[in-house]
Each structure stands twice: as structure tokens, then as C-alpha cells.
Length: 185
Ligand SMILES: [Zn+2]
Image 1 (cartoon, rainbow, N blue to C red):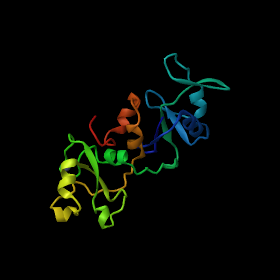
Image 2 (cartoon, rainbow, N blue to C red):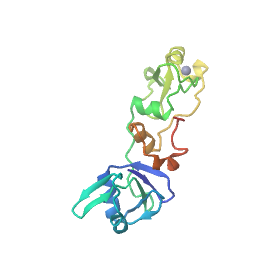
Image 3 (tube, rainbow, N blue to C red):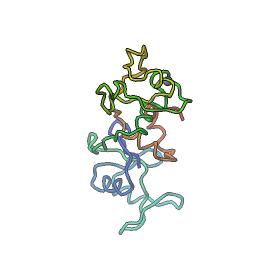
Image 4 (tube, helix red, strand yellow):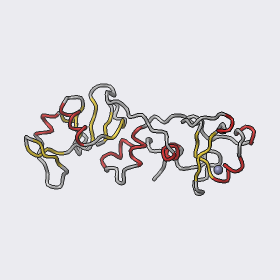
């Protein structure tokens, strides 16, 4: 379930259970297919269509919300992004941060080499093609005459990373994800 903040920006993806708890506590409204917000009472009163995903509750079957709109300002805590190979590749759009190549098999480069005290952090790790990694060796980009296309930083969108793990983001989510996804696919 995709959670949007009050400005309709995606904040994170939750389980159905979390979504219901937000809806039930009045912290969020559920959006229907026409993007109309509904509070829990109104949502519970909606007919459950046979083709709609639903959940069983003590008060009968309820439609499973697919989009939630937070009422307060972004009160859902963001899950901190785990620093991993996969997430660095994702942040960097699966392309080398020096030459932009997205064909070659990617490696991880320490911008300031580990042998020179470079740490494994969001600010010091970038996606790098094998060729650039070999060229750079144990040098800094300046020493190697290479330029980073983007200064590496901790990514802010939890949603982006969560989406990568999903095979099929729901079609209802699309209007809210424009500009959020780092790659075109
Ligand atoms: Zn490269």
C-alpha cells in the first residue's frame, strides 16, 4: 500500500495491516479508484467488488486500500535506507557514476579509496563500471582525472528502494510516482 503525505508525495510502502491501522486510527484516509479520500467509517461502508482485493475483519470484508493519504504532516516514520550494494546501484540508476555506462557489469567504487581511509558510506560509495574501476585504481577521482557525475549522498526516498523489490507496482500508484523513480523503466 502506497502512503502519500498531504502534498501527495509518496512516503513509503506499507503492508495491508499497517495501512489499516493508519486508516483506523484516523491518521490517514484511503483513496478510492477516483482518488477520492475516505475516512475509515466511509471506507468500511464501501461495497467490496468481487474483483477488488479485500481483507476479512470482524465486521466483514473490507476493501484493501491501495493508496493512503496522510492527514498530518508526514507522521509515518521513514525507514532508514540500508546501505547495501544493491541500494547504491539503485540510487545511481544502475549506471557508472564516472562514465555513465549502464551496459557493463557494475562494481562498487570507494571514491576515497579504502586504503586511504575512505569509509563505506552513502557519501563515499558509487556505482562504477569495471573499466572505470580499473582506471581509477587506488586514486582519488582528482588524481585519476575522473569526474563524478553526481555527488554521492544518502538517498531520501524510501519508496524508490521499496519499489525496486516489487515486481508490479499497482497502476493506481503511477500518477504519484512520476519524478520519483530514478530510471525510466
Ligand atoms: Zn565507467
